[in-house]
Amino acid sequence: MKLIGKITKILANFYYVQDKENKTWECFARARLLKEGKLLYVGDDVEIETTSDKQGVITDLKERKNKIDKPQAANIDQVLVVFSTFEPEFDFYNLDRYLSYISYELPDERVRICINKTDLKKINIDNTYRNSTYDISYISALTGQGVNELSSEIVNRVSVLAGPSGVGKSSLIKALVPALDIRIGRISSIKQGTHQTRNIELVSVKGSYGEGFLIDTPGFAQFSFGGLDPYKVLQTFKEFSDTECEFSNCLHYGEDGCSIPDLVNSNKIPETRYESYKKIMDEVHSEIVYGSKKESKSKSIGGKEKTKYKVLPKIDPGKRTKSRKQEKQELLRLDEESD
Ligand SMILES: Nc1nc2c(ncn2[C@@H]2O[C@H](COP(=O)(O)OP(=O)(O)OP(=O)(O)O)[C@@H](O)[C@H]2O)c(=O)[nH]1
Ligand SMILES: [Mg+2]
Ligand SMILES: [Zn+2]
Image (cartoon, rainbow, N blue to C red; front, side):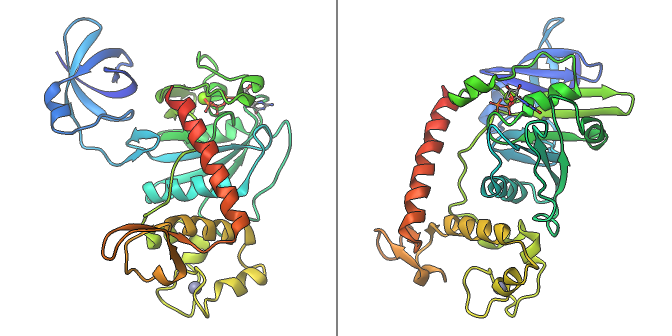
């Protein structure tokens, strides 16, 4: 029997596919698909050929609207970037990294900031993001505060939850779908760096308001902006990309005569957003091709003419030490993720 369904979970070589009647089939992927280089992601719509009353083989991958490689998911309508106010402590720069990275990968989809654990501590970041494209929800997965309002935002959409480990992504899904039995961490284990969610998993949420799909993902910290297209990165900061600057092609990255610093000084543009942008741009330019226009601002750390080599932007030594430390932490976390 042939069926169409959605991949909800991938474990080793097994793909779990949910059909239109909400029945889940345990499937292998036909070798030909993998040979053609078609990687299958959670969220993909596939055709299966059943082989028993529970199992089947994926025979075809339907056209996908989009995909993201970290976390791996496809056919996404919206990303909920979840951060907590406390444990782990809220951090503007870290949030801006997630926002920029996700908007870069999925430029046409909605990205919403969800500030969780408002029962522990309250923060208000409305002002900082007033000229950005991001909507903000303040919630508590624990008390249910703000969760109902959020549920109306997930109807008829596939939403990916992304954010650092321990911020409460799985808890939020559980608050939206109380019957779910998903792994939720304890704060004590979070402090030891344990990642609770191991697999990317899609769940459907049904309520009186309709149905939506949520994709839970393990917290991740390791992603780099090195070598990305700086103009596309600029597009992820709408408050600058939409602002008039003296120069039509200005990256607002230290160019003489750029108007952005004045707008920051007069509070028209939030300073934290500008600071995040510059740090992200440092990273973008940390891997550039020889001869590109930023070369003069950067210091070579090796390599030959006309070959691609690594350059480091000139940043003050304090910052550089910090970023190396962060890098090391991120690598440590990645180790934990992949164990
Ligand atoms: N006080 C409070 N604690 C919360 C809230 N949401 C989650 N927690 C706690 O925070 C811890 C981490 O929650 P998880 O839902 O496992 O976090 P996660 O983002 O899924 O973490 P990973 O799966 O590791 O990426 C657990 O101890 C939760 O009980 C909240 O709104 N308030
Ligand atoms: Mg989780
Ligand atoms: Zn400018």
